[in-house]
Structures are given as structure tokens and as C-alpha cells.
Length: 198
Image (cartoon, one colour):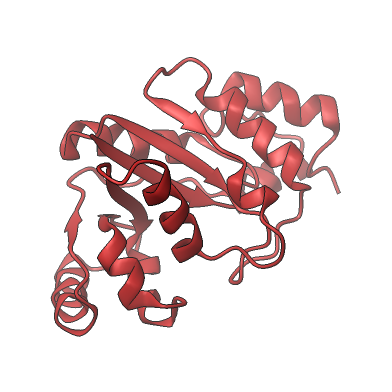
């Protein structure tokens, strides 16, 4: 049993997130992908309350039986760290193989993660190339992290879509159509709740 894990603020979740999750299932033979909206992440400060971000994820993945969402990071008090989440998931199902999905930009930040070596023991990583990152440099970093932290990682062949949450928020502020950026359900929810309009 191989579980893919995609964490993030999802402020909002967009089609790029879903594109990467589907590619990960295909390329890494994952059984499913768990989406984990952040509660109080150390590297970002979400604009939108966690409950609304969680609901957007739930709406975005509702049609795909291989995707599921958990509020475990939202419910955890204080800062949310990946190592705590991985330990909790291992406790739930010790035999399950955990594969964490990250962008190539995040790979370079891995040594700054809390107890990075412990994270490397608990999971492997699937890395998606971000716009502007050079594959040769990313592969070199993968080798460095294998030596320094014991991190097993592989590069996803599928490239990420040129979509970001900040781009979606800007489109909302400018009154643009969100087709091609987020799912119709998420677009409707954003409109209903008046999110990102100021």
C-alpha cells in the first residue's frame, strides 16, 4: 500500500495540484493521495481560515475516488510540522509506504525542515519540477540530500502546470474567469464566500 501525501496551504487548491497528484499516482504506482491542508505552517501565513481551505479541497477532489482529504494538521494545536504528521500516519498503518509530494523549490529547503533526518526515515519523496528550476541542479540536490540526510527521492517526469494560488487570487481580484485555474466547484465556492476579492 503506497500513500501519496500532498501538503500545502491550498489557498486555494487549483488544477495544478490535481494535475501533480494524478501524475504521481500514474508514475509512482500510488494507491491514493492524501491532501493535507496546513493548520499553522512554519513557512507560510494563509490568508483564508483553515475550515474554508479544507472545504475547497474537499470540493476539488470529490469526483476522484483515489483522492482524500484530512483535517489532522488543521486540528493540531500550534505549529504544524511534517514529521508529526508522518508519525501519526505511520501509527495508523505501520505497513503503509508514505511518499511525500513536493515541488523542486521545496527540495532545496529540506535541510531547514524540523528533524529532516527523521522525516527522511519516515517517507520517500516525489519531486515535481517547478518553472525556472534546472533539472540537472535538482538531480544534484537529490544526490546531496541522499548523502547528507538519507533522503530517498525521485523526480516526477510530468511537469507542474504554470498555475499558482497567488495567480488564482489575483484573477479573483481582477474579476477574471477562473476556468482553467480551479475546478468549477471551487470557483463557485470562492464566489459564494466572496474569497480573495480584496
